[in-house]
Image 1: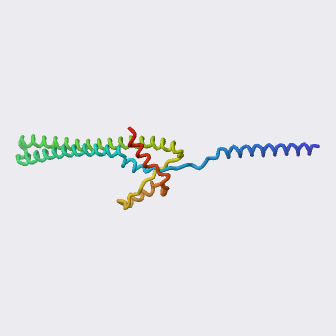
Image 2: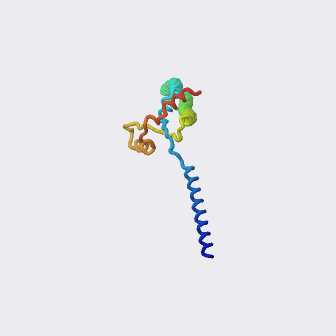
Image 3: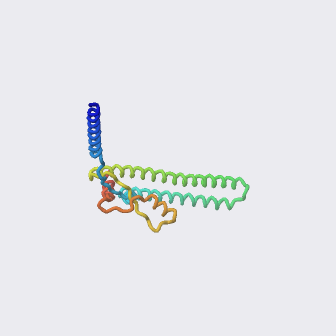
Amino acid sequence: MKLGKMLITGVVVVALCLSFGYRQGVAAGEKQIAPAKIAVVDVTKVLQNSKKHKAWQEKMTAEEITMKAEFQKDKKTLEALQANMDLLKPGTKDYVDAMKDFLDKKGLLEAKDKFYQEKVNMEMQQWTENLYTQMLTLIQEIAQKKGVDIVLAQEQLDLPSPSLRDFMLSIRTKKVLYCGDQVDITEEVMSALDASK
């Protein structure tokens, strides 16, 4: 009798374990992730070839031309001061005054040049960050509309590379080695970026 009860209890425990295991398996199967839909975007192409970026570059080029013209004008003034100083006798009051004026203007010109370089770098960084942020937002919107789960950055290699170091860096950072045209949404992203405000 005890053996019968133990046998029945064992069968019930095994049945419960099998039932629990079956339910866990069904739940795990329902949670299984479907294959992801993937797209790629050539980030560099979008950032460099968008109409917005080209307009910004034209503005910066015009500003650079103006600054170079000012720099050349100031440089000619310095050269004239140097020539005037060369005509004066070293150690005289006029020579010392001319030297002071020359060094003041030279220091000011060097400071202006350094300021301009820093300003250009800062503006370029801010512009690129802003454009990149806009691009990310648009990529997300386009991906969601297309039902894409993952968007990878695809970069083109510029060959021949300027140096072995640059080439090796490109190889290390290039993650998408091949993709079909149907998954490339670069042109859509660039068009959306140009259309955005």
